[in-house]
Amino acid sequence: VQQPAGLYDAATQTFPLQVLAAAVDPSQCVAFGGGLRLAVAGEQSSFTIQARDKFQNRKIFGGDSFWAQFTQDGFVTTMNATDNVDGTYSVTYVLNASGYFAVKLSHPEQDGFFEQIIDRTVMLRNSPAPI
Image (cartoon, rainbow, N blue to C red; front, top):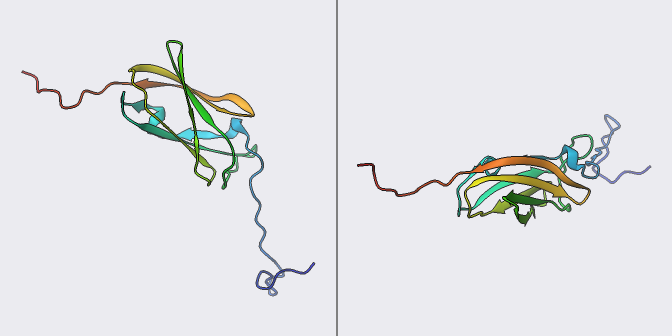
């Protein structure tokens, strides 16, 4: 086998080999960020999904599809995740109602691989000082 010039190390008789993550396994993906814990009604919030394979290796390139569903009192809002082309996917959302929302993250191979309840508490801004 002939290796490209500059890659083969004659002293150690080695050459570099890069092993990439396998296909995404939704059950191994993780989600993180403030938007999974708390948000303010009417204001933008976000969180990130890290794609991983079945061996829990982080993906380092994009190309997958993820989406999030926010459910409250039977009303469902669905947001597609933005591919950051580095194995992570951003979900940015604005919800106008306060209260508790069920959050479900999905991938074409597994619906609802990640589910959590978030508390969307309305914060009053610029309210007058107590008398």
